[in-house]
Length: 427
Ligand code: NAD
Image (cartoon, rainbow, N blue to C red; front, side, top):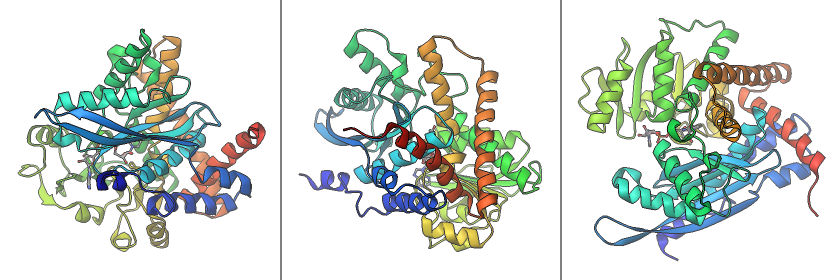
């Protein structure tokens, strides 16, 4: 096995992020008297598929990429979760992310299980043709796992509506007819849902509004916001929250960020990033590093990039009032403790970023019925589900005097456990 593949096939047994998710699940489980057999079952993914993906690169050479598809749990319905293209993708991280998908779907009571997929690659260094070949071959290799009744992928870091269109087309070509329900987050023209592209960011903002109500905090001109990551989740979170009148004072991407105490023009920042591929030279603000952004004194901090960004090393310097986790797993369990001690109100990932999978679920339902909803209907239904989930988590947090993360995990596990125990297991 090449050393590259060895780095990809990392066991979850000793992986920090995987163990972090397990620890939160175990501790949260204690608050609902979780059945130890349920914990045992949930502590490992149901199935994992490793695939090697040969791609002819533009220079004529063939490069073989490592990829995965993991089903964590399918008790509640077909597996559901994104596909990530990133150089650090590995089996343990993909498995941890699939576990978070199980818990997220259960928390918002969707009839879906948890999955995740990924390819270890750098999409920023690949041409459109190379990415298309990579996506089509990956789809072909994971064909036996995916399908509208089995496992429905969606975009994640490094993938977008175009990627989903290629997955859908490849899957449909194998079967000989169009199967829009095999993916969500696809373009509107081939069965995508209105409101899906901004759904995760919109959901993040909806949960911030709910949190602010509970904390008697104003959401408006006096509210300052910083957003780490300016892709799908970061950009739409920033855009939607600035639409509520809030001042987004800092945004960033992988190359660093920009800061302006008077508030940034989000559309101008987006246009600049599209044209220049980094915030360097952006005239609307001053340069800032990703670490500095996380430590700004703001009302709302939205990490919307990678996992494990707020750790025991920097948690003490985080100064926001509300931490809304747009990304999956941005805060380590050790950092969570420090943030609690500082009185920071955290809206955990499985709640804050659940808007994406909620509207993905709507897209799947619309596709199965071939009956499409208006954007207003989509956003209203998203609001209904996410604000209801927020209330359940908040009430449990108040009743049990535990933090919002443990509360969200506990509320989710309670629902899932009942379903698992009702179904039992085979044989
Ligand atoms: P994306 O690829 O559209 O954007 C990722 C952003 O993060 C980019 O701006 C990139 O430059 C930035 N980034 C990458 N590495 C970074 C680093 N080291 N430091 C700072 N910024 C960095 O991805 P996305 O879909 O917006 O996903 C972002 C996060 O949100 C991920 O954790 C993902 O799992 C989570 N999420 C996404 C969705 C969705 O619907 N897309 C749903 C739920 C959760």
